[in-house]
Amino acid sequence: MTRKRITNRNIKKVFKKASLLILITFATSCSDSEKGEFYNYKWSSAGGNVVIENGFYHTYTSFDASKKQMQGDTLIPIQKLDSTVLVTQRMGLGKLTEDYKRVLNRDSVRIDTFRYDIRDFNGIKLILFKEIAKDMYYSEVFKLEDEVELTENKTFVQPTFEIAGYTIGDTISRENVRLKDVYTFGDHKFEVVELRGNTDVEMELLGGKYISSITQKNINDRDLKDIINVVNHKMQAEPEYSPIVQRGEYLSDSYSWDKASVKILLIGMVYKGSSPYGQKSKDWTLVYEDYIKERLLKLDFSNSTPTSAIIE
Image (cartoon, rainbow, N blue to C red):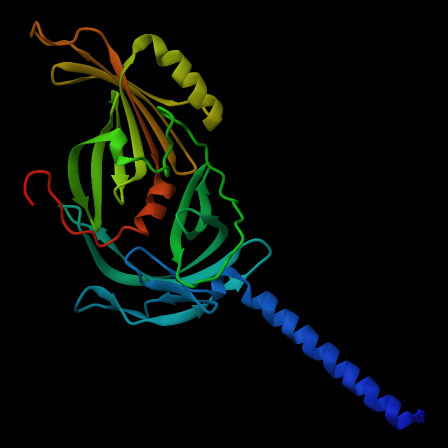
C-alpha cells in the first residue's frame, strides 16, 4: 500500500478544508437558531392580516389628513433582547366623538418592549404583552400561519376558575346546552346558552362550542363568603367593593376583581318594589371573563355572518 507523503502543503489543505467545514457548520447552526425565533414566521391578527413575518412588523407609513385615516404599509425590524422583543409601529391618534366613534387627527411612532407567550390554544397562538400598571396588561394576540411546530413557553400567568366544571377556552357539546340568544359583535358571532340540568349557568360561545365567558345566577347570600375567599386566594388580592345603589325597583351592590386580563364580577340584587311577586331575598350573580382567551378565540372565528335570534 502506497503511503502519501505528508508535506506542509498537504497540511495546509487539510487545515483549510477543516476550517471551511467548521465555518459552514457554524453558519448553518446560527442560521437555524435565528430561523427558529418566533418572529421569523408569519403571524396574523383577527381578520387574517399578516402582521409579523421574516423578523419584521407590518405598520402604517403615514396619516392622511384629508381622509383622516392611516395609510400605506411598511416593515420595521423586530429587535430581540434577552427575554423580550422591541416592536416599533406607526399608529393613528385621535379622539372619541359623542357617539363613541374614534376619529383620527394625527399619527405617532410607538415603541413597545414586549414579553412573549407562545401557547397551543386551538392551534399555535402568540401573545405579546407588557405590564402597564400593577396586574394590568396591554397585549396583542396573533395566530401562526406557517405549518411549523413551535414549543410553548407560557410566561403570561393568569388565574383560572371553574364554574359547574367548565373554564373559559373549554369546548362543550351542543347536547349539554340550550340556545337562548345569538348576537353579532363586530366580526364575531356569539351564542348565549344555558346548561342543561342547571339553568342558572349561562355561557357565551364562539365557534359553536368554545366557551368565552361563564355566568352563574341565583347564588344564595350564604355562599357569598366562600366565593370571595376562593377568588381572593386565586387573584391574590382583595376585591373592589361598590356600595349599594338603587337601580329602579332593585338595590344592588357588587364585588369585582381584575388581574392579568381576568375579571370576576359578583353582583347582588334584592327587590324593593311593591309587587307581591317580586323576590324579596337577595341573590347574587357571578360573572367570569378572560379577556386574553376570548381574543385568542376571536382569531379563529372572525368575519362571521351577521346573526339574529329573531330573523334569519
